[in-house]
Image (cartoon, rainbow, N blue to C red; front, side, top):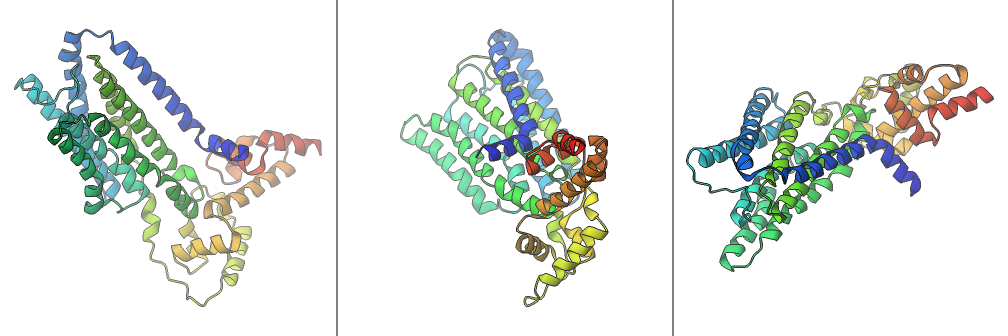
Length: 383
């Protein structure tokens, strides 16, 4: 149990620190916002924040659609940005030009209708991580299954004259938890197809979800308090999410592209043993694991198998994922270098054993061996 907790900490240390820092900044912002005068907040501050959010969303949506390159994840994020941009533009127009505040984010309690609109916009932010974690899973039927309960709660709030707004406010957390349940399956898939977790979206998706969590908690605070500046923190958190995420998504490849491999299929009656021997020979002689970007489909250079059978070969013959399989070779290579050259720098060992950088090598080596590279090298010097 302690070992597993330590491994989780090593894998997600930077994400945990990111969450703690962002949460502390949000809490400080909520506290400072209480001292903003009502006129100042309802006037220029809210207008500037919404204008910035609208601009970033609409510009980001254009970038996503122009550079979608057939990637559903970019289109999904483009739809979310476009929806938020239009919503903010409408809010600015009806509040500051038409003077018809149909949607209020000020000091008055939020109505069920306002919560419904806010939750619909929040749900749009869950489309991107859902599409990344499970491509094609969110269809029209599942969309209705997620949104109808929220709409039904708002209808009951009006028809039965029962205050269900707290339940409506908490409902997005249910959808958020649903997305979280896909994370473990996605990590397993990545480990079966990639030799380096830094080359895929696991850490980024975790960070994205953590930002959403802070925004959700900020929203709940905004709902359960009556301070006039309660939306101040919510707005800059959203602006951070839109700007930061747009840049990340725009420059990230689709990790699921390997799933569209069209290699030949292994006959059902063919045993795995000959392929294991060919793979072992290739790994020991050519040392492809020294390439930090090695992927599962790269094994097709020596094995006439498709992605599914390659994964089955690794799982069946070695009892591990592709990521763990390649990591074992890299760790052994690092141990060999440290034994033969105990004065070698850790940075050089990481580079020459196939790890993407020093931090990844340090974290992986410590997790797999129970000792840090420096501790292992000290043992080698004392032999």
